[in-house]
Structure formats: C-alpha cells, structure tokens
Image (cartoon, rainbow, N blue to C red; front, side, top):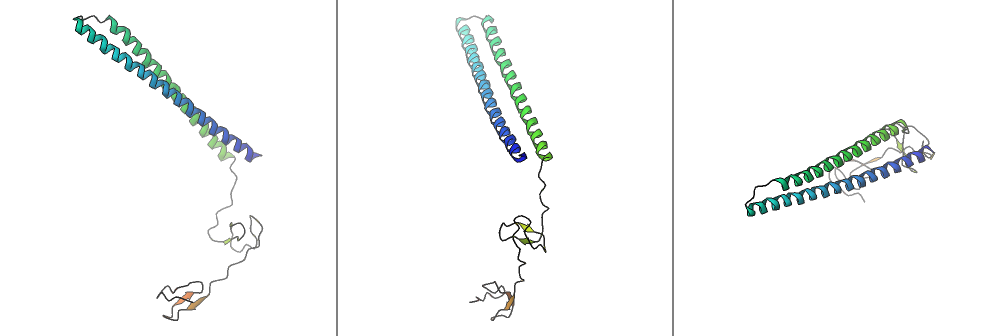
Length: 173
C-alpha cells in the first residue's frame, strides 16, 4: 500500500506542477496584456503631444491622465509578478517536502555487487559463491573458466571462445 500511496503522491505532485504552469502562463498572459495597454497609452501620449505641437499649444493636463493610467498598469504588472513568485516559491517548497518525504520512505536496495554471478533467469548479479539467486531463487551455475587453445599459426594461447587469434588474426574453423 505504501507504494500505491507514493504513486498517488507522485501523480498529485505532477498535477500540481501542471496546474502551477498553467496558472503562471495565464498570469504571464495578463502581464503581456498590461504591457500592450501601456504601449497603447504611450502611443496616445505621443499622439496627444503631436496634436498639441501642431496646434501650437503647450498644455500638459491631458498627459497627466495618461501617466496615471500607465502607473496603474505598472502596479498591476508588479502585483502579477509577485503572485508568480509566490506560486513558484510554493511549488519549490512542495517539491522539497516531497523529496524529503521520499528520502524518509526510501526502500533499501541490496548493496551493489562488484563481481558475482549473474542469474540466467532474472539477470540480477548475486554475491560470489551464491548457489541460488536472491531475487528469483533460480539455481546459479558457476561459470567454468574459459579454456585456451594454441593458435596453429603463431602458437599464442587464445581463449577457446575466440573465432580469431588476437595476436596474428588466424581464423579458427
């Protein structure tokens, strides 16, 4: 059951991360929308001053209103960026908690075996001298030492399993 619980936690973590990505993407879209609104206001400021220039006026009352609108959009962007930072920090904290949780419930594995007998049934490496596989119980055969034969061409000792001599390249039939 612990395995199924871990699997469920893993699936929830993935779902939470996907939801976080979707939420951050939506918030980034809102930031983009706010920046577009700022660009629109900047364009209107430019148009306003150009029209004043054409009319020969120097009144700044219309631009002050647009400045306030731009300031409002900049505040909205800052609020959204703070929300993104909160989501990312919360997600990182959950990931760290999940990692520490996994470390607490880690299943101990068998110590690695440097040299040993590989089970012909399941492929697990067993301790040297073991007669039965620790994983599947299959009887283990201790491999016989390879026999050597002399090369008829150069006389070098070559393992019987070789098809060619490693010294001269003679091909065994």
